[in-house]
Length: 366
Image (cartoon, rainbow, N blue to C red):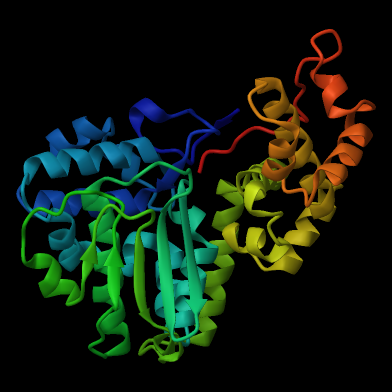
C-alpha cells in the first residue's frame, strides 16, 4: 500500500504506508532556517533526498528519514555548535506545524495548548510520541521517538525543546524557568547557549527527552486565545490526523502498544488512548467501528506475546506469565489453554508446538 499524492518529493512519490512521515511545513521550516544560517540549499536538499516539489503543499507528507538526513547535514555544517538551539530562536514558529501549531497558539492556556500538541503529534511526525505527565507540583513534557531505543538527532531534540521554551515564554508573556531539561543524546557541545536559553540544569544521556516544570504553569492563560478560531483549527487537525492514522490500522497499533507494556501490567485504556492522542470515548468508539474491543485486543496481544516467548525456549513458564501481564502462573495457563487448546508445556513440546501464527497485526512505525 502506498500513500499517493500527499507524499511530496520527486523521488518519494509513492512511499510505503509503513514508513513514517512528517508534515511538509515542518521540514520546510528547518530547511529555510539552515539556509538562512548560511548552508547551501541544493546541498541540504540533496542530503535529504528531496527536491523543491516536496514543499509545494505545506500539509503534504515528507518521509521522516528525509528530515533526519536534513538534520544530520545541518549538524555537519555546524560541527561543535548547538545549532538546534540557534535555529529554534529563528524558526520554531506555529506556522511550521500547520493547523496543530496555530491551534496550540489559540488555546485558552498552556495546558490546553500542550494537550493539542500531544493529541495531534502524529500529524506533525508519525514517528513521535508527545505527552504531558502531571506529578503533583511538577509536570513533564515528554517528546521523542515512539519506538524504544531510538533517538532523534541532537540538533532536532534541542530545536524542539528550545522552541517549546522560547515560544511559550512569548505566548504567556512570562519569564519562566524549567526545573530541568533532559535529553537522550549524550553530547553537549561545550557551549553556554544551553544555560542562556533554558536557565536550568541540563541532563544528557537520559531515557527520554523531557522538559520538567511547575505544573501551575499549565493553567496560565495564553495571549492569543481565540475559541472560535481554535474550533476551526481543531477540526482541520482532526481531518489531517485521519490521513496519517487510518482507522483500519488502529487495531494493529493498539496491540503493539499493549504488548510493549505488558511486563509492567496491562495498560489502562485511558493510557493507550492518550498515547494515540484521542479521548477514551473516541478511542472506544473507533474500536467498536472496527468490530473489536480493548479487552479483545489485550487478549490478542497477550496471545501473540506468549507464543513468541514460548517459541524462544529461553524463558520459563513463570517468566512468560509475568512478561504477558498475568498475575500468576495459573491465570496464564487457563488463558493459554483457551487460546490453543493445550497447556503451555504441551505446546512447547517439539512434536506438538505449531508454528507461531500472527493475528494479522503488524508492528507500526512510530
